[in-house]
Picture 1 (cartoon, rainbow, N blue to C red):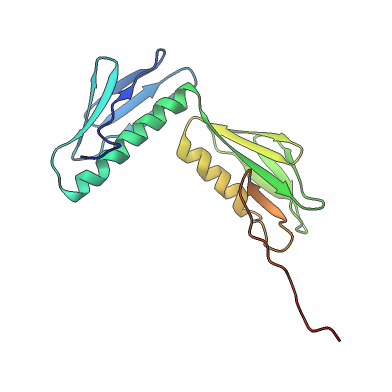
Picture 2: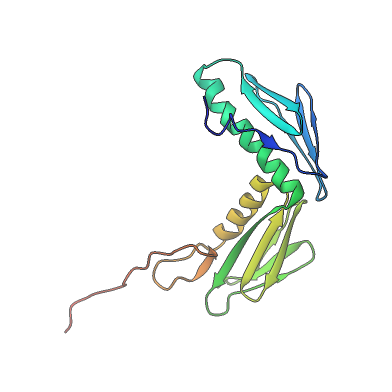
Amino acid sequence: MSRIGKLPIDIPSGVTITVDPEFIVVAGSKGTLKQFTMQGVTVVQEEGQIVVTRENDEPKNRSKHGLMRTLISNMVVGVTTGFSKQLEINGVGYRVALAGAGLKMNLGFSHEVNYSLPTGVTAVVEQNLITVSGIDKQQVGQVAAEIRSLKKPEPYKGKGIKYVGERIIRKSGKSGKDK
């Protein structure tokens, strides 16, 4: 039995979950999320909890069991508290500012880089920190990864965009002969 999949999901107050044969809809104070139900996995709502079970022990159904439970759990957390990721910009002259529904960044290129945020994701800029937040964990992580990929941190001086708390392994640089 899946260690993650067998755990029931508690439904907090203020969250409504609708379980259909095709979709699971979770609605809360921050918004509504929808997830399709995978084949071979059964989702049942009983006594203020969601229980995820699988039909049999085939490898495909075993792998879907824990995944479906985690997706539903992330939806419940998303509509109650939400998710956020913080990015840090390092470098001389590297700047970021909010521009309408997107970000305008100077990242050492000859031009400004504009990134438009998708619906459901918001960003807050404080000096050299960007906080990306939303209710969908996958979407927040994807947006943060796309922003980071615009200028990945380089290993010599550490310039670029990195996650807060991310450790960049530094290189020493050239070590030529003394003449």
